[in-house]
Image (cartoon, rainbow, N blue to C red; front, side, top):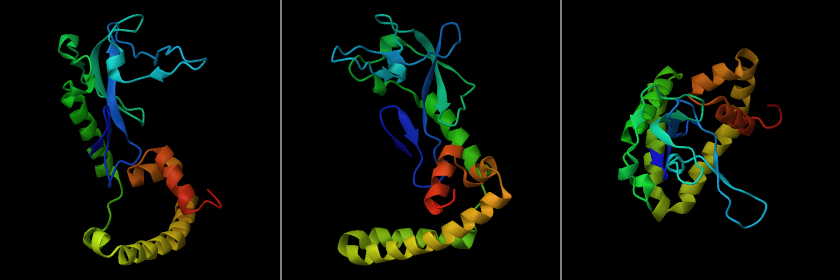
Length: 198
């Protein structure tokens, strides 16, 4: 799993577009909007949605609970209290957010489990290609580039054909669910596979 200082994203496989983060709830149970902070550097006032901006300081909203949130619109049912006394002033992302993160991981696992499985023999071949590229990349980058080029050719030809067949038979949501992706991520992938039509 790849994560920044507040965002979670699986890679390279699964749950494409299902980026997770810590969401917050105010004392009355509502979800706050972005926090706008005037930096005094012109007409643009930047906005922030990182959980640690909702500490009640100045005119900021005060959040007393956190939960998992996903880019697909899903929110975790379990909430976790925020002990602001334990949140480090200069490094708030060091605060323990493992509860929401685990809930989001469970969410993405359910999405992956519902996706169309890659046939076992194909998954094995893909794994072997990745291993070979990892071994080749540093010592023989030209061979690695040639292998990637061959894979690109397959995607260019078969990706276009598969996209056209899939979009004739299935809705955008069905395709996204089958890929284990959000509709936005699936749509971007299909445009890449068949930019002339989709």
